[in-house]
Figure 1 (cartoon, rainbow, N blue to C red):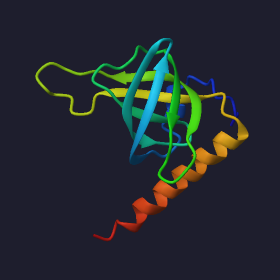
Figure 2: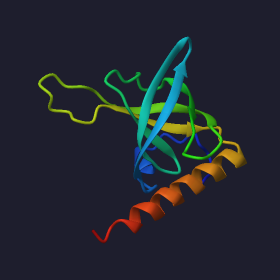
Figure 3: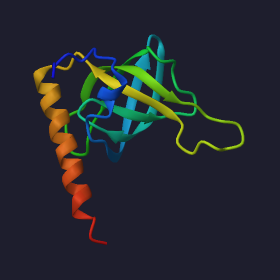
Figure 4: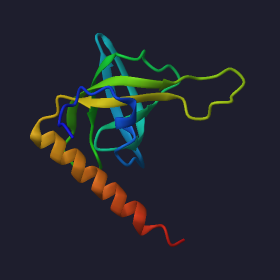
Length: 127
C-alpha cells in the first residue's frame, strides 16, 4: 500500500477504521472561514458536520485541537458529501474530508488521536 495521500480510490476510504468524536474545527476555503464539528475521524480523514457542505474537490485549511493538545493545522480535500435533504430525512449532513500532504509530525499526531479515541471508545463498551 502506498503512502500517497492523493489516492482517490473510494474503497481506500473504508480501509481505515472510523471513530466517533466531537472536536471543534475551524476550516477555510479561499476567503470563506467556517466553524463546525468533526463527528468522526480516521487516520485518513474526517467527517465535518455541515448543513451546507462544500463541493467535492474543494481544498480546505483545517485547524482543530484535541482537548489539552496543541492545534493541528492541515489541509484536506472534500471527497464526498452528504447533503441536507428536504423533509429532514438526512440526520447527518456534512462532508468527508481526506487529509492532504501530512507532515510526519502531523501524521503521528493524528494516529495518536485516533488511537486515543479508539481506546476511550473501547473503555465504555461494557455499559
